[in-house]
Image (cartoon, rainbow, N blue to C red; front, side, top):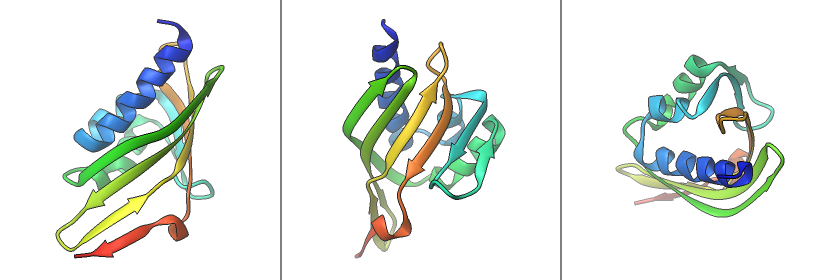
Length: 125
């Protein structure tokens, strides 16, 4: 598989894992010394353990992620997607744009998520 197809496949796997996996599953997609800045301007999480802890908020959540658009150039992917999270009393929807870089094995080396609280859509039930 060529590098761009491998990166596309990894992005698809990442989104599928947000919807169907847990924090440990998501963290395995990252390189050992990767960084996560979500959203941009917030604390940067460094290393797989810190990244797993960050994604812990998704453990047990009813989430689904849908890819809206994806671009790959070199070792970098930029993609727009929708995350829908359902709780007992509300549905939260956000459509971030993530920029990720990858190593030669298509492990994520950095992720920066572009969104703000103003981008959240919250509907109560």
